[in-house]
Length: 202
Image 1 (cartoon, rainbow, N blue to C red):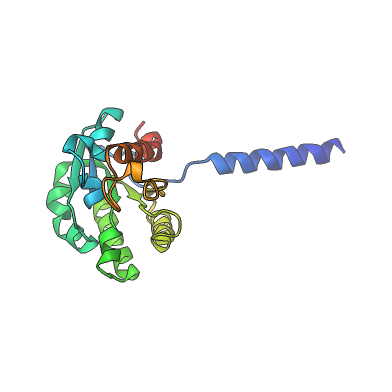
Image 2: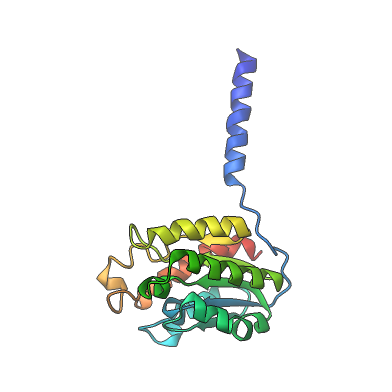
């Protein structure tokens, strides 16, 4: 009876330990000096002053310089065109990649979005930097992107930061217009991004 109880305890302990283990992330030992926030209007900070964008709010929370490389209206195709100059030439340690909203609005097929993000991640990782992939879905909105990005992050050994827009899109007090956050909303996004990346910056 005691042996059976001991085996059960060991099984539970192993399950807990496995559940707490953080996923393996490529380039965890990156020697880059900057955190690059690479994205579209959500990264740019549409609707608020530059000081209230999520990269600006994130900056004082981390010990590395944070660069805002967000451009309003960008699709993943636009991102590929400026990846070299806006990211790879900036000595990245970690690149926080946030795209897909404009792909959806422009009716870009999901497979093309995923292909473009895959290329972006590969090129960043080849530069020696970590990648964090940000999911801007909320509830059923853009749910298919959440599933695809989570799978891609796992395949590429990238950090996955889910549903950063949750309870923002449905809360008018957190938005500056129908879709974009206000200062309160961007602060919440910064906090969620920090929660996703902090353990990998130690």
